[in-house]
Image 1 (cartoon, rainbow, N blue to C red):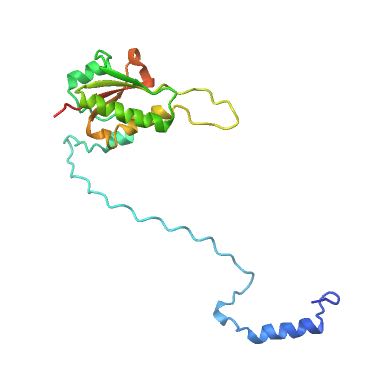
Image 2: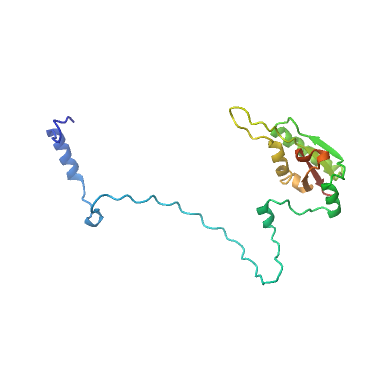
Amino acid sequence: MARKGRGRLSAEDRALWSKVVAGATPMPRTATPKGPARLLPPAKPALPAPEAQEPLPEFRIGEKARSTGSERALTGASPAPRMDARAFGRLKRGKLVPEARIDLHGMTVAAAHAALVAFVLRAAGDGLRLVLVITGKGREDGDGPVPEQRGILRRQVPHWLQIPPLVQVVLQVEPAHRRHGGSGAYYVYLRRRQ
């Protein structure tokens, strides 16, 4: 389609244009905008339907609030101890001595997970109550071209202890006292063998 000057159509272009016009259907009069074309704002994505929540219990002024347990998740506080309060206090002060320990330093995530599962299940089978899991604190340096997450074992071990198969034998998980490794280790208090 060659153009011959500005605003002029060749005979070939006019023939093509007449075929296009002949096959087109006009828009309804109500749909034609008057004045300059207006752009509509982009449609907002639909919000997901809110999850059904339990209704709040009635509350009277002067009455003590009942705990639902969800406030711990919101504040980040550790859950209430499931073990004996006296033993829990001694544990937090580092007065209880772990009966066995495992050091996961230098292991890959997969190797550490397998070693932890085997160690905890064996300790529970032997009737031990308190074991120490040493994860290390992770390196603090962030040098290098690619930022890496440090201390992956320190973050993963508490999660692994709260899922099957270990959740059936673990009663309580707490960060260790300074004398047993501090934030680089965890006390794992096991359930009594039945």
